[in-house]
Image 1: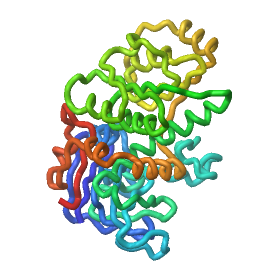
Image 2: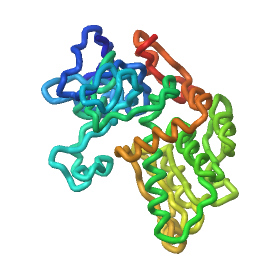
Image 3: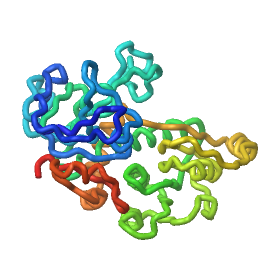
Length: 348
């Protein structure tokens, strides 16, 4: 069995092992054959040695957290043989903390959660994998070519869920959303905004490549300019770049009673001049909210599966800029200039 692995903490230890062991039964009752895994920035950071944690008792981590598989067996009867399935990435901590105890492992307080392909659980970039029924999500059969997008769209499903919960603090009828960054997370955030009937605006620096057309295909407006130069104030901002200047400008741009969700992670180590007092004044006097959002729980994964099934399949396929067989895994994990989403195809 093939598996794409790294030694966490050791830069450039990426390799494909041709004789990886079959998944152990304790990994879960559901056995699936891998169809594909998506590649994302988290994978690049693990490969660079910045973070990642192997399962206990080993120094090797199987990569892959954006999974799509087909059920081979499920003795519990939760799924049927042949079902499309994705595995939920994060599992609750063993203590558990108050949030993990009620199924909100995305809000874990003590950091003892585990994550497939990231932290202490083997990932899905192998020919076969197992998952516990409670962490298996059935996908619509029509999603055979795009179902690996479920993990990234679950992240923005959570973001939208929390935006709408915060909005209920007062009478609030949002009309517009600004998404900063037209990578996979940004484009999927825009998709969910369009599904909600909002006027969607996406901001990115790219003027060529597929991004502008993908935004326009949603009926949204594409902006290739700084946030500060926009001539409107959105009710909702979803910031997906993590770029400090964009983050701060986005926080200042929201309309009164606006909600700003920070979904991009900054690398840190950069200092910029900024009028923090003016930001404080605007947030307080306009009743604005700024919050961070990462990961997703079961509720969000189910919401994401419904959103994927409703989306235009041609548009979703257009997000995938490269599909490569396992044998070309090094190419898959090498970023390309116009990449949006790169997929490793285990069936090729």
